[in-house]
Amino acid sequence: MMLPAAVATARTPKAHDDQKEKQWTSMENGPWDFAPDWYYYFLHKNYSGAEMYWKWAGFKSGYRVRFKEEKSNVKRIMPVRVTAEETQRQKLSKVEAERAYVESLYKEELAREADRAVDITYSAYKEEFERMQSCIADGLLYCLNKSKGKMKYQVDELSRQNEIVCANIAYIHKTGVGYGLENAKRQQAYEEAKAEMGRLVSRTARLAAVAATHY
Image (cartoon, rainbow, N blue to C red):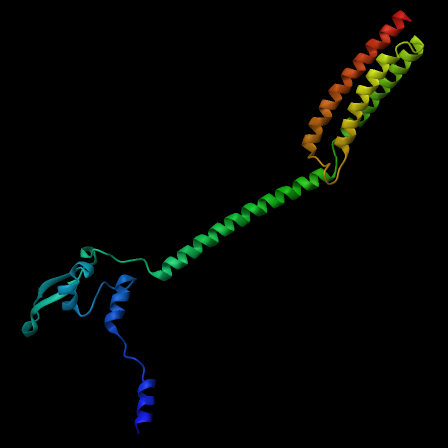
């Protein structure tokens, strides 16, 4: 007989604790109320913000206890669930901002990679480069023939400098991993190469003039 009674007692659910529920809801998001009220008034007045007041209620008139949050020295805290949700929202917002930033960088890099893959600026300079190279080659050959090889040193020096300029142009024109440049940078480099090649054309012309005068 004692064993079934013990089992029945173990299975009996615990009674609902209204006092603890009031304390929890007061500190979270429920009404500011505590129980037992006189207990909090005498022992936890600063904590609960309890105050005594007179209430007229006929034969039941008397002093009562009420609780005011503004008189409490702890005040209400933000609910744990609300705090967790807000924290989660902030984390998600930060993650989304970082994802958008990384995605923008990725798209920008893809655009740059596509821009580096094809040299669309060389065609605008190709004919001019070929024309100036023809001038340089004809001029240097003229100097050698006219001087009968006596201007070989000057011709070799101009040829060496011309080869450096041509090698730079060939490097700029290369595409692929390790070689690709954005077309805006290619255009700037081609402009610099064009100016340098133009100076070589002028020097070749002056050297040809010297050959024509002295030989």
